[in-house]
Amino acid sequence: MPVFAYRGLSAEGRAVAGVVDADSARTARGKLRASGIFPTEITEETAAASGSLREWLASFESAKMSSTELALFSRQLAALLSAGVQLVDALGILSEQAAKASVKKMLSQVRERVREGSSLADALSAHREVFSELYIGMVRAGETAAALEPVLGRLAEYSERQSEFISKVRGALTYPIIMMCVGMAIMFFLVTYVVPQVALIFQQSHAALPLATRVLIGLSDFLTSYWIEVLLAVAALAAGVATALRTRRGRHLYDRAVLASPYLGPTVIRIICARFARTLSTLLASGVQLLPALDAVKGVVTNSLLREAVEQSRDSIREGHGMGQTLAQSGLFPPLLVEMVKVGERSGELEQMLDRVADNYEHEVSTSLAQVTTVLEPLMTLMMAGVVVFMMLAVLMPIFQLNQLMR
Image 1: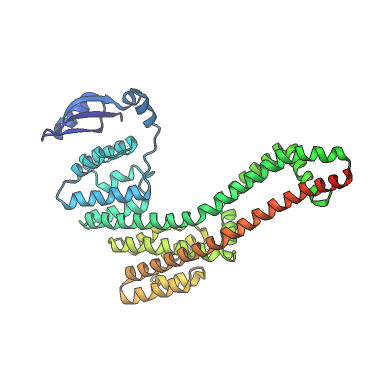
Image 2: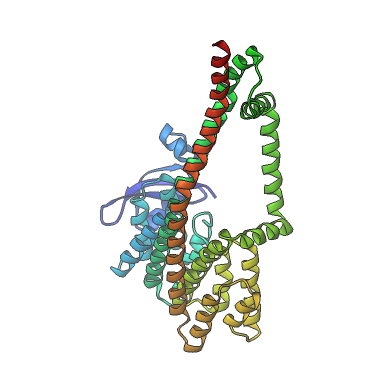
């Protein structure tokens, strides 16, 4: 169905703008007038997109929102609904104040579907590139329980916590990764450009070169002669790994290797358990039943082995077993999570126990990453210094030999 962009006046005389789905411009005008909007300008979206360079570029812009933007949207929508604003009007207000044209268009489409009688969850489900199954499921539960405002508040808090947690992880790993990339780029430049020019002088002297110099020259000759083959081999290796990871067996082998790593494995488990506990707690607190909540929470469990354990626990719960017992049988989840889940099931406070587990693991991950960063920075500095010293010795030692011969 065509989409029409419109500008007009509301019944109160306020300027409004948005998009509407209709078979024709005449039908779009009729729908707008029926909803209390008097259009002053209406154009088909394809035509509007080519009207100016800015609008044409905006047509390629993604409507996907970050965790921070999604949290802000949820909190603002909850505030408007709590203030007594109707859902359709609240969506219109948020659409008008959206900074990105793609988000404005997406929210206008959600608003039109809600105006036509769809639930908010159904309207959001048409934009799964923006709203996850978790988000849609919680909104649906809030609408069913007539508690949409508190659910949106929990969603905002959840998105903010997830964004803060992910930012901490990325911040701890950013500096070491940048140092590694810059160091490799500098070494590649020296080996492929500087060393060949210096090596030409050494070869013309016909003097016996030290082992370090011969190794450096050999590496330089190899990279300058076969750099195309090296790039193709690296690309082929990356493509092969990516293809293998798409298969069930390949993904299992990779995830098993990650979990078996001395330091990486426990850290990954803590990160996944923190997100699992926080998400499941948020769903349960929003009124979602345990089995549907476990279906939705699988999306945040990125390790295939742990995800299968969650699926098995869901099947066991359906048969009448407790979640703590089934998680313990997998042997993959930490004892703290298992015991807290068992305590929560016995006391009827599963959401609170899961929140405490999430707080504990998030704190452990932050502390652990800070410690690793503290160790990695001087370690990588020493490694780069070692490479630089090796290259200096490989270049300077033959120069010293040439000076002695000339004397």
